[in-house]
Image 1 (cartoon, rainbow, N blue to C red):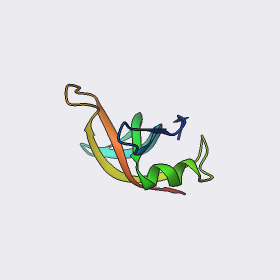
Image 2 (spheres, rainbow, N blue to C red; image 1 turned 120 degrees about the vertical axis):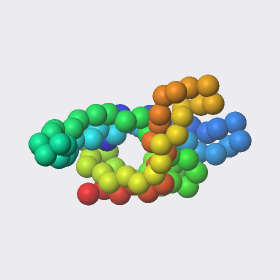
Image 3 (cartoon, helix red, strand yellow; image 1 turned 30 degrees about the vertical axis):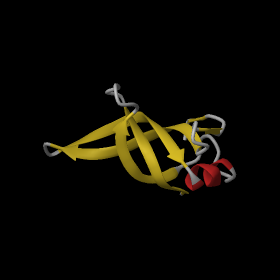
Image 4 (cartoon, rainbow, N blue to C red; image 1 turned 45 degrees about the horizontal axis):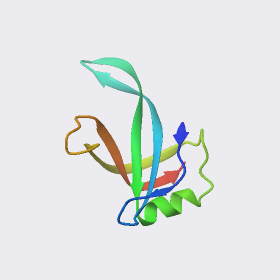
Length: 89
């Protein structure tokens, strides 16, 4: 985790936590090893947002995340990773 904002609330009162995840791995493509690095904008909503805000996960922590990709908004083409589960590794 390389970026973390303060918890905020949607107009409906749902907790929302925004952060940035950094991914680094090696993958095989066309029979060759390739180093993959990227940063992904992520959000957690509801109970998971509250749990993460109160956890001991800090910037620089290695985490494993599970969730789905969705557009940032109805008119946006930018993707955001919606976190359903996040654990420190």
